[in-house]
Image (cartoon, rainbow, N blue to C red; front, top):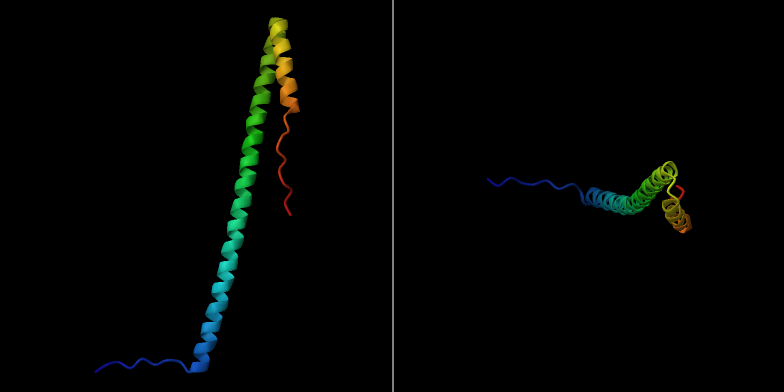
Length: 99
């Protein structure tokens, strides 16, 4: 009536459990490694976004300088020169070199 479940011999079961435990450990280490890589990539993404914002600001500043020169607007040029000096004094984030 009741089906009998056949279990592998105890030695084979122990080996299977040991292999399973090893595989679980490897998966956990891989997950931890992927989490670290993800955090590093998020940091690099933020640095790139910051550099892109700074590049856009610099391009806008250059366009404003060009227009002030075309308009011969000395007041605007003086103001833009101060903005450019402030921009140049701002440290730009450096991307970390890949290991």
